[in-house]
Amino acid sequence: MKFAKFLLVCVGAIALSTSVRGQDSAAHTKRGIELAKAKQYDKAAEEFGLAMKADPKDSKHYLNRGNAYKAGGKFADAEKDFSKYIEMETESPAGYAGRGKARLSQKNFDGAIEDLSKAIDENDDDVDTYRFRAFAYLSKNDYEKAAADYSSVLEKKADDAQALERRGFANRNLKKYDEAIADYTKAIAKTPRDPEAFRGRGYAYTLSGDNAKAVADFEAVLKMKPNDTDAQARLKAAQAKLKGAASPAPAASPH
Image 1 (cartoon, one colour):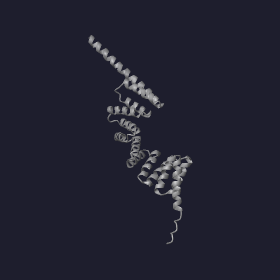
Image 2: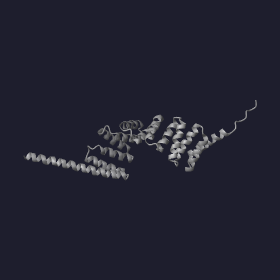
Image 3: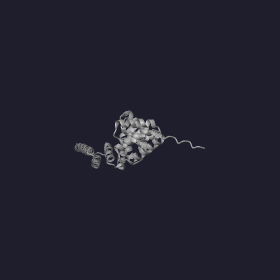
Image 4: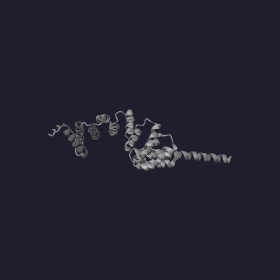
C-alpha cells in the first residue's frame, strides 16, 4: 500500500514536471515569435533555443530557430537547425525549403536545388520555393530550368513583376528575344519606375537589332538614374548603331 502511494506521488510529479516544461517551452516560443516579428533575430534565436531545452522532443523549435538564424544572416547555423528538423520530420517540405534557402545564401547551388526540389515534391503550391530554385538555376547559368520555374511562379501569381523580369533575363540569355521583350514589357507595366526592367528590355532590343527602341529604353533608365554609367554606355552604343544604319552606303570606288 505504501509502495502504491509512493508510485502515485512519483507519477504526479512527472506529470507536473512535463506540464511545467511545456509551459516554459510555449512561453519561450511566444517571446521568440514576438522578437522575430520585431526583427530582433539573435534574441529570437535565443528564445527558441530555450524552448528547445525545455522541450527537446518538439521539432518545431529547430524550425523556428533555423528561420530566425536565416533571417539574421547566420546561414550555416540555420542549415544545421533545418537539418536537425529534417531528421525529426523527414517528409515536411518546410525543413527542405528552409535548408535549401540557407544553402542558396551560402552559394551551395547544387545543394539548394536538391533541397528545394524535395520541398516542391512535397508541396508544389509554394511560390517562393519555385522562386528560390529558379534563382539557383540562374546562378548556375541553367536558363532553361530557371525560365521553367519562373513560369511556374507566374502560373500561380501572374502579376509577379520580379518573376517576369527574371524570366526575361533567362529568355534573353536563351536568345529568345521576343519572349524576353514581352516579359520585360509586362514587368514595366507592373512597375513603371523600375529602371532594371527598362535596362533589361533595352539590352534585349539591342540584341534583336531594334536599336531605336533600345535607345528609348536606355533614355528611360537615365531619366530615373542620370549618373548610371552602364546605361550611358549602352545608350551611346545603340545610338551609334542606329546612326550607322541610317547613314547612306558609301559610293563604289571607280576602277
